[in-house]
Amino acid sequence: MEDQNWFTLLRDTLNVFGNLAECIGLLFLVTQFRSSKKKPHPPKVRVVSKRKPEQTRERMVS
Image (cartoon, rainbow, N blue to C red; front, top):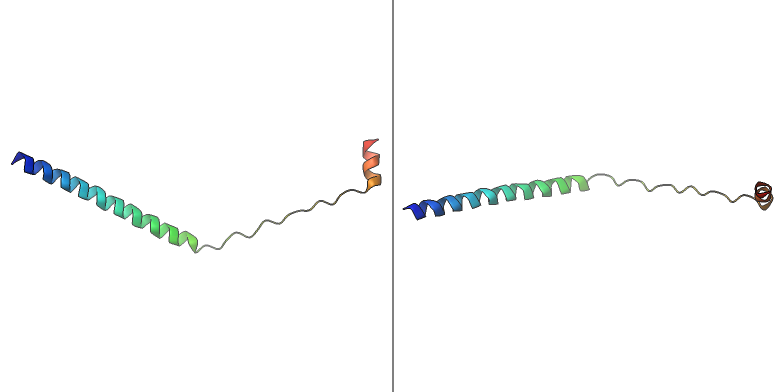
């Protein structure tokens, strides 16, 4: 009789952990699909710096 209670307790405990894992998995899936509906970020604009003319660079060096 004692062994049967032990196995029942173990079975019920594993069942609770299985249900908890299933709920966490469903929550993960729901959040993944919800975040995929967001608009993608616009690409960053590259700022191109123009090279200074040769004369200006020579003045800076001297």
